[in-house]
Amino acid sequence: MQPTHYRGKVDGNIKKYLRRRHEDGAVCPSFVGYEPFEQLWALRVVFPYVTSIRLFFPQRQDEHYYVIDKDTAEGVLLKAHSGQQGRHSIRSLLTNKESQYWEVDGLHPSAYRD
Image 1 (cartoon, rainbow, N blue to C red):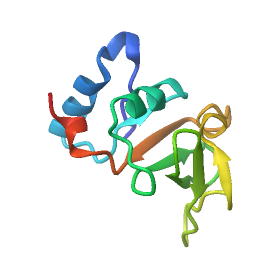
Image 2 (cartoon, rainbow, N blue to C red):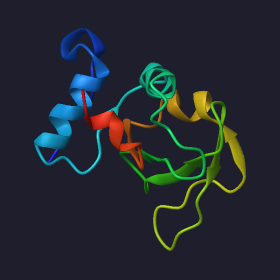
Image 3 (tube, rainbow, N blue to C red):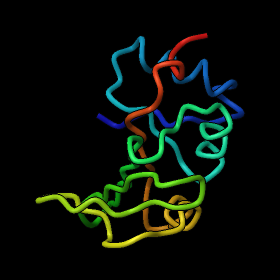
Image 4 (cartoon, rainbow, N blue to C red):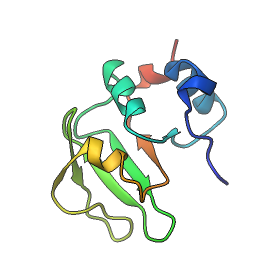
């Protein structure tokens, strides 16, 4: 099943999008680009070392990263879908043209409430 990615102009308020996705039973909300991450950070629902980002690629395995701070993510080493080892710019990861979209997991529960 192809996820419905957040589109600011279509979906409106990002908190309402998160709540709808949560109520619809979506495992992880999905996004394209860097702007949604900025919005999530501004809402204070991203937790360093708890929140993770999963990048999806059409021709290769997905990649996982933990958010370290507003600007930095660290590759998670897994048996499958490992991120690139080391620390990376979140902006660079989320604007990578090879990636189709990204999902976020481990947001603060207030992300899903009004």
